[in-house]
Length: 292
Image (cartoon, rainbow, N blue to C red; front, side, top):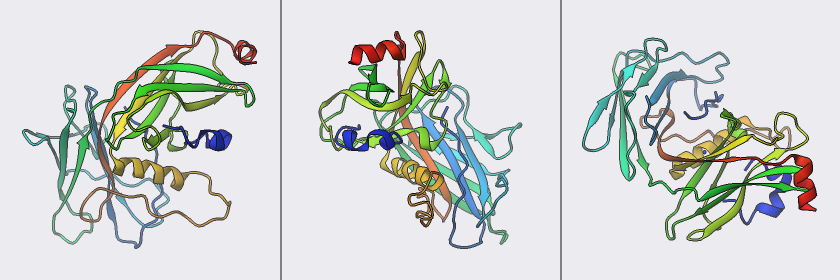
């Protein structure tokens, strides 16, 4: 988690992912163009999106979008044809009334594309299982008096015997705080499988930073995604790819993993979402006094 820079030693035994969009410069093994897929299905009712673009070695400019593809989505019973956006070529959308169903395997197929320009159409596929939702019991706001950090804490029960992967987003007064991979929090359940996570520290906010400090009346919303391991690994690798390296001149990490067939890059993910909001009641000074 990002706030390990503040408290990695303290928290290593107790840390319990519309989605964030961030461009990633991919280091490929050759200069052959590759299809890049960015798509997700969630339990929210909305128009879900699959973005298609071309990726190439050391490309510095924005990657060109792939228009005219045939993109279909199947839940095992029904097949949905996504429509390309009139306003954003290369973006393929479900209907506004679409929502993902829990305990369902979703299959994505992309056809009518010729990425390598050899005159033969290619087909790309991917699958993602939409895991059941684990409801948040509550969210609390604490304060660390030594580091002067606001603590956003989760209270929830993790099912026993099930390997779960969690990704967290934070909203403050309706505005997304975790707007890039380095500001998101994510973890598996290895330290609390089958137990009640009573006040696990998920986000840290610097009370001495005007952009992060909370004031009375601020509404804090914790958003939890139930993701598959492949997407958990993807976000973890993407954060390493785009984050600060230690040591500074260390080599680049391995390529960001993909779950798309036929040599394509990117991810197709399906996940359940839960949200819980709490209103902050105190100033940092008041929280500091109460913590002493």
